[in-house]
Structures are given as structure tokens and as C-alpha cells.
Image 1 (cartoon, rainbow, N blue to C red):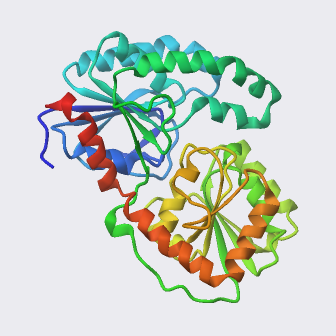
Image 2: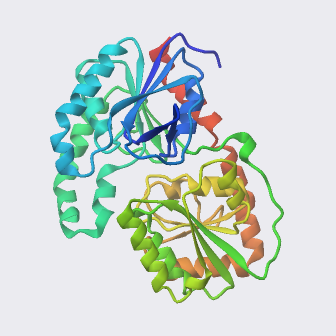
Image 3: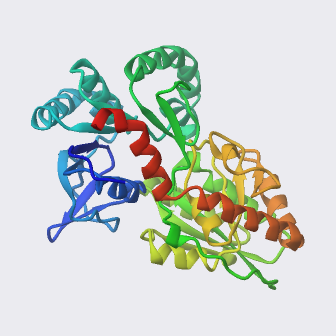
Length: 386
């Protein structure tokens, strides 16, 4: 594809940190943005700047990283107090880049929603990258009864408002189309895989099998259910946990491990950078657990498929659009610990099934690369940039 004579401005809510004039992100979508950026004259990425430092992805030199704000709001009260600040930020960004095309990540903790609203009012040239369903995540996050009640009252109003925001603007959904299914809406298998990341490995019988969890420690990711299910598995297995979360969520996971009757076979690894380091762990894995209570799509099971790892995932959100039960993975009901344990035992005891799921998984991974995502995105927005 050719390079377009147009600037791209990306707006998101995931924090970045600066260290020694280097910028680090860890939302998981940066490699996709980095690949897309090479087709534009200049690319600017606006996101909240963290007051902490951490490990993460680095953009190439063709992406200029700029602060949307100093740190991210921590709760809804702080969000309300910072609305005018956020509105002023998107106003300043728009005034600086009026001739650019904007890509806004949505809802992105309301920063995306605020940005889309401003750009809609100003009739700016923008498209939306829909990465999650804010309402569904609100419904399950924290397991609070009032959230579930609020969900049913807010949902109709929220959907009407968002559909007005999105009308006649290109929307690229992660996994499942949520608000529109018309000619402006597209869906991608969101992943950070490159074609070169896909490597087949020899499947051998073992005396002990390695289960892995890769992801954040938020409640709706369901890791607690995987830890509880682990003690019910009859096969000889170990569980290895990769990821990160806030202090409260991380401590909750560590407490759950300490309470487990099988804790001597659980390894808490923590955060691992995407790339060779993470793929080295996938190469050690036999089965990946994706025990989400809700997931718009998820990326880890695609990464696992690319390295010959069998997948056990929840039947929720956009996951079943990609993980097909008994074809390229096994699906279980969200939060059902017995089903998770039974699925793992089935895969270990039925090597023929495991090998077939892995073989089909490679085919899915090949259709879910960054190159495929960039190609679809360019085709979707081409009328806006030529």
C-alpha cells in the first residue's frame, strides 16, 4: 500500500510513561497503531502521561507521543471534576491538527467518548476504533448489585447517544459489531501478531502439562475462577500467571493463590513485555485459559494459537466469534469452575482432539495479523484520506 499525504492523530486513554526520552505504553494495541502509522505523513499519539514508570511497548520514530493530560482519572468523581480539562485538551488537539484524520479509541474510560463528541460537533474528519463495551464491563466489574441495576436503566439511553455519535462515521470494532452493522462498520480479529510471529511446534505427550493465564487482573477477566478451577483438575498440571493490575486487584489474586489447595503448583510471574519474552512463555505452554466473565474479544488466545497452544475460553462477548467450540478451542460458561477443570482434563486426556484444535488454531491466527488489520483499516477509511 502507498503512503498517504495526510497526518494521523490517535487519541486514547491508556497511560504512557517517559524515561530517558523514551516512551512506554502497555495497553496492548500499540503495535497495531505503529503499523498503521507508516502509511501517513506524520502520526501523533495523544494519551495521558503517567506519573509512574513501567515496562511496555515503544513506538517507532515515525510516531510522536504527546500528553493528552497528566495521568488518568481514578474514578467517576475525578472524571466529573476533570471534564472541562479533558474538553480543553481535545479542543487544543483539534485546533493544532485541523487537517488531519483522527482515530479515536472508544470508549477508553470516557476520554474516547468525550473526544468523539467534540469532533462530531466540530464536524472533524475522524473514525472510531471500538475496543470494548463500556456498559457490559460496568455490569460485571466489582460484582456490585447497584451496577447491575443501573445497567438496565442506562443501556437504552447510552445506545441511542452512541449511535448518534457514530452515525455515518467509520467504526472498526474489536471482534463483535456492537452499535451498527451498516456499511460504515467493520470488525477485525484484534491482535498484535505479525505473520513472522506464527510458528508451529511439535506436539508431544508429557507427564506434566503447563496451563497459562495471560492478561490483566480485573475482576471481569475471571482469573479468580481459573485459580479455583485449578484445584479441581485431576490431570498433572501447573498453572502460570502472567499479567498486571492495580494494587487491589493484584493483592486479591495473590490472596486467592494462597488459599488454593494446589498453590505449590501455581507460579505468579507478573508482567511480561509483549514480544519475544512473552512468546517464549507461550512456547512453554500447553493450554491457555481465558476465563473472562465478559470480553469484547481478547487477544491472548490468538497469540496462543499462533504458537501451538490449545485454548479454553469463556462463551461470552466476542470470544465465540473466533473461538469455535470443538473446532479451534473449547468454550465454557463464564465463571463455571467445574467446566474449566473438565475442559482441561479433556484436552490432556484426548491428544487427538488437542492436536486438531491446535491445527485449526494456526489457521485462525494467520487471518488475525497486524498486517490484515492495517489493510482493512486503510480500505475502510480510504474515502476520507484521498
